[in-house]
Image 1 (cartoon, rainbow, N blue to C red):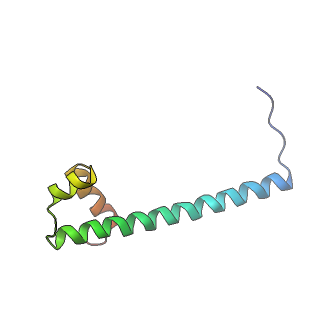
Image 2: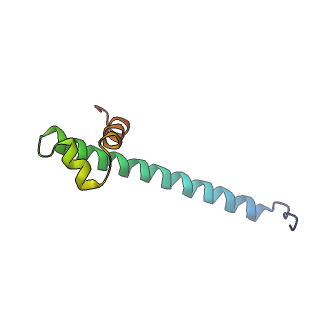
Length: 76
């Protein structure tokens, strides 16, 4: 294995930019999950689909759907 290079101001700045990009990505993913699972919960609560029908359509288990709704919605 080759030794690592010492940090330079450029590499330190690049790492900071990558960390900021990762934080932005994480926030966007969280928002997308909240939007998606809120929509799923809305359809189930409106009785447009049962949890079993939703699970079959989305190819998830009923338990997975229940846990995600609980995790990503305020009134889960």
